[in-house]
Amino acid sequence: MAENDQVFHDFSQEKSQGSSSAKAFIIFVIVIAIGVGVGYALAKGKSKIIQPSSTAQEEGMSTAAKGTVIGSSDTSTFKDTAEGILQKGGINGEGQYHLVRPGGDSQSVYLTSSIVDLSQYTGKKVKVNGQTQKAKTAGWLMDVGRVEVLE
Image (cartoon, rainbow, N blue to C red; front, side, top):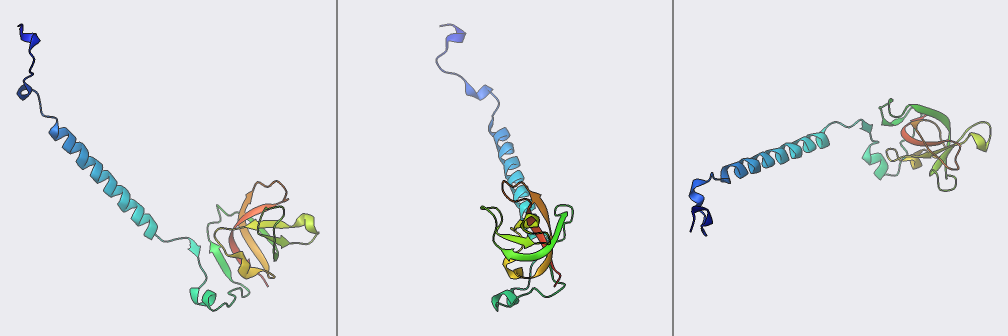
């Protein structure tokens, strides 16, 4: 038999791959730990959303006194504004609420919000800050981020 035709291979002469796979595993664990730490820090960070007091909500009292401002202070995201009387109901599935404004139905602003509970302000004159959304039926559809009670 020639030297290259050996049935058995001598593994003792090759470098061990164990140390490089151990290093890769340690790096993987460190990256995961950093990701968890950053996620935790972001979750515990201060939010820009201002919530009404929970005791007022539990007792069923309206926190909708004149001058009350609820929601985000982020005016760069919620830069569109509108004023009117807040009423329940959207139009053809767009919006859950709408603002009644002077000029008739064509001037209504249809509203939705994942930040503010608009049901607390029905029947009140409010100023809303939001972001205009694409609509199929509504003349103006807005995602509300902030509500200020005017009357």
